[in-house]
Image 1 (cartoon, protein in one colour):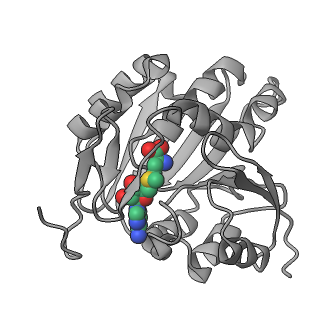
Image 2 (image 1 turned 30 degrees about the horizontal axis):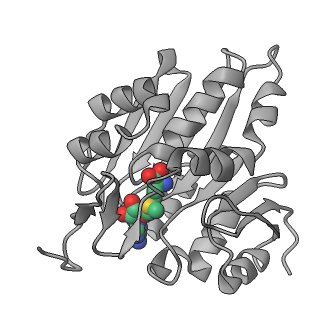
Length: 250
Ligand SMILES: C[S@@+](CC[C@H](N)C(=O)[O-])C[C@H]1O[C@@H](n2cnc3c(N)ncnc32)[C@H](O)[C@@H]1O
């Protein structure tokens, strides 16, 4: 099996329960027992998405923007879409912007998402439309254009710079999902430059959530203007991190 640094093949294995695991990073994409519940809790509940979607003003439609680091299987996207379609006014658009340097194939993505019967419709639509690339990006539109997914196939720094340069997140993202494998296994997704770019993509009120509570991640985000608090974890994780951008650097 090749694990060369010079390829962007994801290099995965499948565990006994059929969940994908990265060989390159020796880490899992999601927890095979309760990955769906965990994604709903960490990405959606910790960012208070249901309440925020419900509060969007019907009379003045706009776009709610989520930026994610690490598209992986698309589980977080499908969960966000599910919560969006159940709660947001139909006139609004959700723009979900994600990035991925080591994209799964469409077959791998479909197989991984096949785990979650709760998401079957969204997973099937995603797997049918998703075309992974070595570089560049893909824009996918679902629900008559009211769900817009942008995937940038690049390294985290270059992808965040592109989101900034092309103003893909408009005046600032509404929510950030940070999901780039454990910092101990993949420090490249958790550098001061990544935190600086995330802050540049934020505005006062932008929320974030992540699976990690690593001290250097917390301090790095706080140094860029995020106020963070630890929250009780889910499943095997005892604690998680959530935060809000306030524009006041420590
Ligand atoms: C934990 S997985 C993300 C899981 C995903 N959010 C989901 O819903 O399935 C982390 C992802 O980050 C990607 N990744 C790792 N290092 C990266 C880098 N330097 N730049 C961009 N993506 C990277 C991995 O290929 C992997 O897909």
